[in-house]
Image 1 (cartoon, one colour):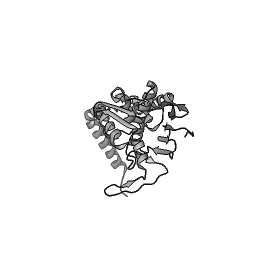
Image 2 (tube, one colour):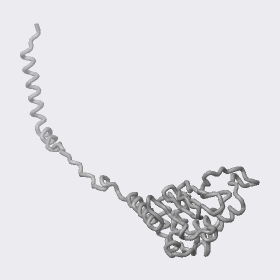
Image 3 (cartoon, helix red, strand yellow):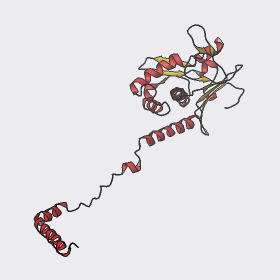
Length: 246
């Protein structure tokens, strides 16, 4: 993780962690530690990368990235939920609206260095955060549109972070290069998954057989069975003549 006295957000696609460092606040690290959770961190990264390409913090229409979202869902997401493209936008919209902003219950990430405690009433285990911390995190996730017309914004400006202070890392690459390299790796994985094994792709050789001439053998026996019988009787008669009892 980058160390700096300035506020920053860093998305680490090597370990699927998001580091949040704000001025006069305790640094926080969010670990997206399952296939489904990794998918949603990748959606956050997609939005951040698109904003950096545009050079401004704005809503990003997800309809323009359906093929890419499907790739993310099928690879790192493990096809969690429905893999149908038509259902992806609905899922992402709901998670961005309800689950991702929820810092207290944190259904889509694990807050490293913090321990969950029993909550009040019907709420299960929750993280202890101040209202300011919870509001700051929730304000990052702005959405517009509807289930089918999804436009998402990662509003880093609301917590005092600019695009230059938001970074993406993958391997030794940074920002756009890191994202492109990450996606290239996923495409290679997907292609390898669907490529047939070379040995299995080769046709099986036809079995070579050497049949015995059974029909000819049967025909010869049929036509010469009387000769064989006479020869056998002759051998038996000769044996009786030679053998004499003492």
